[in-house]
Length: 555
Image (cartoon, rainbow, N blue to C red; front, top):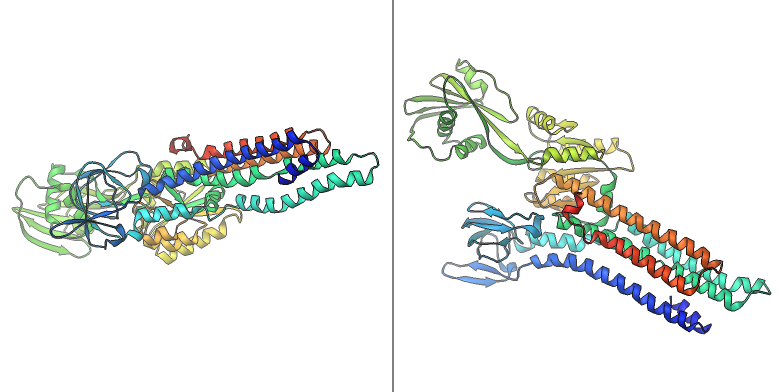
């Protein structure tokens, strides 16, 4: 642009020289405005960083920097304040706004015993929180680090455009010089002024600003759109890699299921009611710390009649026998009832089945299951619509894994796997897939970290994921929704679509005008309009990703 302006001035084409400067500055202004808007969108996330924490001492409350608070300290979070550190609610009840963390608009109710994440906003109640993570290790700090560092990892398309510009620019400059000076040197009737003007027009048209600015801006917008939807992507290379998925492999517990066991079904027999079966079974299990026993007690709540445990005996590998007031109660698996010679009807279901006998009569069965997340089935269906294969890797028993896999529609299920066996299975999947395609793994536990690192794309469920899983992952989903995997793919496809549109637009228009400029059929004014116009259209098209929200992504 500098060469074109000076050249036009030297040729006496003053209006055209001014036009180059004015319209180029207009294009630069439009680019700068779009870039600033994108940076402001990401910077808005920085507002979740709190300035202080209310540290609770024995007799007072002191405002301190969040970095000064240690694990185990108690902090107070007042209504309207932002939660400064991850922790566990010790007392109080409130609603939390977690929009900045998860993209979820509905407030989350929390009370004593609940885990809360830094960056949430306390809406209405006073909370006392026991800190579980230092400030530098908290959810909020991790989000800020991930978003700020995401642009450092460039996508292949971005790298191509950068390399393309480095080669393209000197080539077109040399071509313009050749166009300006060779014809007058070899042709006696060629006008120097005319051919130099053509060379300058060629230079203006060839400016690669539209590509160099709009492509990174598009990917930056994609990362921002994902962050708004509660999906943190550690680099635009991972965003683009989502376009080339062939298979998505899931962990089960905490990923497709909620990871907390609860009573899901009670079947009765011989005239007993569901209430009687649950209350007697829960009371009989009152001395056990087994997860199934805890689930029974939680489901039962507070008994509404006094029951006293007179005698209690645990039978290894089978269950327990207890004397409750005037009733003998057996609670356990089918082996327990078989060993006691009690006739019963065998039950089936997805989860652990507990059989209950009262006074040597079969009373019924209780199904305890790890609840499948509400959107897990929809997530698998959506992935299949994209033509992706699915698989399940879990350490759970074959029967439970097969039932979950069948219910969700997962094609391949592998159960009772140790962490090393999961890694081996992923290596096997890697060998089977196409070399140009990618393999993704979705998990949340510390045992998933090696597999997340092994996959082409590691995706961690960040709401309850371990630090190791988040560290090893390339994408972090800040909610417990498996459908966000599909949302990430939609954002990636939209990002690539806009990037390809800009490449086609810029190269197509420039090719036409470069030819017209070389033939002398384009003026300097038209050249400037061609360059600024293409840049404006490309930047405006890229800016569509900057205004993409979760609703648009799911259309």
